[in-house]
Amino acid sequence: MNANHPLIFIVEDSLTLAALYSEYLSDEGYQLKHYALGLPVLADLETWLPQVIILDLELPDISGMEILKFINERHLPCTVLVVTAHGSVDIAVDAMRQGAFDFLTKPFDNKRLCTTVRNAVKHQQLCYLVDSYKENYDRCEFGGFVGNSLPMQAVYRMLESAASSRATVFITGESGTGKEVCAETLHRLSPRKDHPLVVLNCAAIPRDLIESEIFGHIKGSFTGAVSDREGAASRANGGTLFLDEICEMELELQSKLLRFIQTGCFQRVGSNRQERVDIRFVCATNRDPFAEVQAGRFREDLFYRLHVIPVTLPPLRERNDDVLMIAKRFLLEFTKEEGKAFSGFSREVENLFLAYGWPGNVRQLQNVIRNIVVLNNGEMVMPSMLPAPLNQLVPTQSMTRPATEATAALPDLPIKPMWQVEKEAIEKAISQCDGNIPLAATMLELSPSTIYRKRVAWTDA
Ligand SMILES: Nc1ncnc2c1ncn2[C@@H]1O[C@H](COP(=O)(O)OP(=O)(O)OP(=O)(O)O)[C@@H](O)[C@H]1O
Ligand SMILES: [Mg+2]
Image (tube, helix red, strand yellow):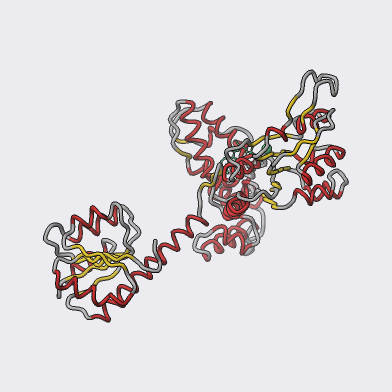
């Protein structure tokens, strides 16, 4: 889109009028293109995208309304000004309903035309800004991630700007929050994407083998080293090395890693030949790295060397509706894989998903959905299909309200039970926030999932 010289189509069968409009608009810095018929406009809209169309509704071949409809149906990002004959207000109103931005009634003067077109150009530029804002700040998916909650939007922006750089990314987050997805996404979006991404899980490899896994070894360097072997560092040359569960690495190896990161050089176990590689490091842990440093289990100098771009993945319970979006994605995926017929969740199940705390995060959600799809049949996922511990969450009467026998003998005073006071306060806040639960939660200094949890309890009570 050319913001300096906006393209404008003038669709007008009268050559005299078209020439007049062109003259009026000649000093405004637009590129003007004239059409005397409607069909060529439809044809050109396949390849051209004007910011504004000045559209006479009465054309010799087709009605201008058809052009308007065409633009509307395809959601083409252009603003339409319709030109109507004197006295045809109904038609103008109709055109506005069909998506026209404004109308001009013949005859109109120079000033009226220029102002209306200027407004239309401005409107189109604002629409463009809003669209690009939505694209960047309201994404439902990014790399391997599904979700559009605010904390995830922040993660997406961070990954997007970090991807092109060689700077080390340090990912933290509870188990199952997507740390590996994060590393893969970074690699895929980076200029290194055609080189390998090598994943090394420091917790999964026996301690005495990690050094050889990272740097490789030469034959005979230790018992079991029957031949020369390349390590992750050599294999990741030109690409990315993902050191997962970095806090599990022994202190001694941490100093070797630090030297490697500082110099780009390393030696295979048993060799004194230096090898040099070009690597982007990404590391992750589900521990608190600061606490590990303080406890003396993680070298401070290595930590600061690695902790260049920190990315923190929020737990699933802090991602609001993302849980439903991700659940739906898994449901469709597993339904297809297992040849079942599921297409959605019942309202109660959705409420339970929102209320549950998901200690195992996305991985736990993935396992729950897999379990449901494999063990059940049907179209809708119902509460009875939920595996433990979600099936224990189905609210019961006794859980949410005190038994009536216990209250029967109490004096008749105007005192409400606490759950009711709380319910009223929360419902009032939600309605004051126009139903925006995350906002109400912020104002109440509660987490949104607490509200969801409580609401499930109230509705099912
Ligand atoms: N936002 C998301 N949308 C869709 N799938 C996701 C999302 N986050 C994670 N996953 C999926 O959830 C599973 C767990 O993710 P991943 O292995 O990246 O988590 P992790 O943080 O590395 O876990 P751990 O700490 O246990 O190693 C994977 O199958 C991954 O594809
Ligand atoms: Mg992981």
